[in-house]
Length: 538
View 1 (spheres, rainbow, N blue to C red):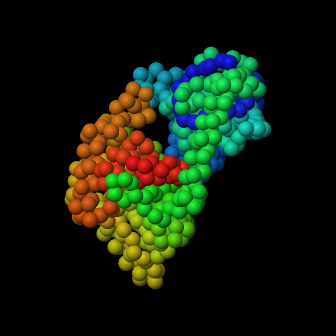
View 2 (cartoon, helix red, strand yellow; view 1 turned 135 degrees about the vertical axis):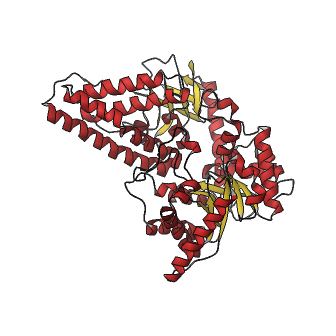
View 3 (cartoon, rainbow, N blue to C red; view 1 turned 180 degrees about the vertical axis):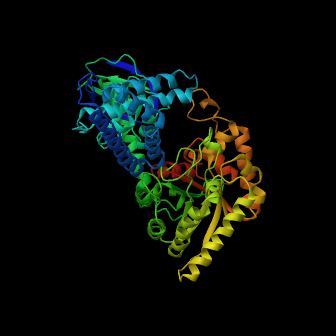
């Protein structure tokens, strides 16, 4: 038995045969036709890769939600970078072959990013190499077959996001990379897919293909040719986890319509976070008492034009009807930062996370925003709708949104459209919103605390940064003080407050949130069973 240690990306246990992924070497020195045809080959490869990234983005959205889809949106933007494109054209016009130009330009760009000294920028060099490999693969005519004929643990030196999403993920039981980064896009996708994964696993032999292994991603270890004791121990762990999962999804034990009553007597409902219609079905299957966060960005991303009002209305109506009167909270599109559709003209910013995003973008682009509000108002006649505003920092933003909703409602009524009742809520995800929660509560019908951004902004720590990650602390006294202030303000004004960030699914925080008086915990559908059990025991 051989034990390999690595860095955890996504937890879990897998037991299966190892399959080695070894991409073919691409010859970049081969002769090509004359210059014009070389340029045609290059431009055709760029077009094909752009289309492929859009398709993979849609697949990622359906399987992982917006977090995974954003990976491919970011890669599309990088592919369209004028400097990279222009440098390749210049080299081809100077006599280089398409493969040579792509390899030279993208390698140089990756080297410059890697030498920046900024950990986040250094990680982006991997994206440049990923795009280079995909372009070379298209230019070489390499087959897109995923190569997974049976369930396995895949072993590779590294793996691009595109190649990961092209695999049949139902057969991908685990992922082990010799290199890779816990903060890279492939890691984000593996985590979103729930695939146990390790990176930076040195010491793996080249003859791993076909050998049996146990991947303990929780413990950061890969056991190659494990002995019977190790296999028995991890088989028991897998069986135990399966029993817990089945209990959480058993309709007889988890009908989703009741309130879970923890020992301290404070009622707390469990809702689901979803990113698309497929997520809504998963939420129903796992017994969610409602939808606490419906990320509407899925309608806007991975396409060449803005979704029509009718498209949006049908999507919202479908989910509201499926939940048959249970609450469905739809967040207005949180575009900006890492979610910038190509058809929108969005100003560049050195720090887009603090720029024109969320409700700020909506209020700056009122006609665009109003089309979504009209769709939401029309859908309100078909269920229990909550409209939630992201990235709020001031009360006047909520007031202006109410005015825009009134304006949209007047238009719809004059057109003969039916409008139902709805609630307007505020996402508390900035220290500014928490600090003025008492004032915001005068204008809002509910609060939902987005802990991911609230922690990031309060602790001044990017959770994806390898150096600052330790400062991203959900239990920071500053974060907890802001959350307690928010809960008090909400209850003082008779409105509910939920938590919809990852802290809601962190079982080590459940008791803390219940004692704080949170009314709703909203998590990804797969986490509902475990959370409800924890609520009942805490």
